[in-house]
Length: 110
Image (cartoon, rainbow, N blue to C red):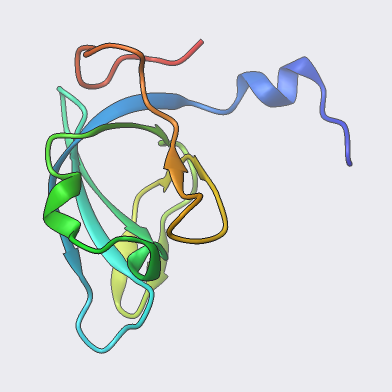
């Protein structure tokens, strides 16, 4: 495992966003388009979680930790403006990094 310095880690901005909408991308087996509320802004995040989510509507209202300062990237013509933080390899083990209790959308993770 490569080591990074604390200064490198300090560059990563992780905030908690609330999912406003979630939908599978047509003609894409894995992609889900998520719209997050971060309080002061909304962002579109693309994630390859479709095989692990039975009902994308179940994600609406969920608060999830997101890395928000990644360079935007296109997936099937959709721009992704961050990356959700999750673990797991399948539908049984997929787990999002979520706050223990409800927080203000956009709250920074320290």
